[in-house]
Image (cartoon, rainbow, N blue to C red; front, side, top):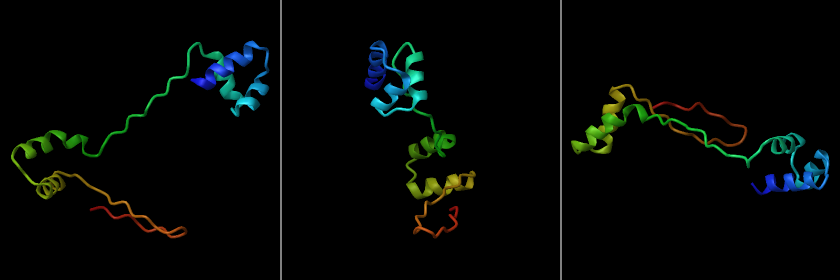
Amino acid sequence: MYKWQQVKALRVKGESIKGIARQLNLSKNTVRKYLRSSGPPEFKRRGYGKMLDDYEGVIGEMLGMDYIGTRIYNELVEKGYKATTRVETAPGRQNIVCSL
């Protein structure tokens, strides 16, 4: 929001788009976007779904029946849940990630 205010103020002073971009270390397209907008930029977080969202109700029921984590996992695997394990590799070496 601070950069947006600076862009507006510099433009009122008669500064060119290129000059504003250089002073504030922004791209010319960003300066143009800020000048076109009537209000400050709004940042929106992208919504990502979780792999377990489809099983939320089932997990709740199992927790209500005092199932332990490994039993819940095994039951979910039977229902089609597939978990993956992240594998870190050294630079230049890439391994295949296996599903559990």
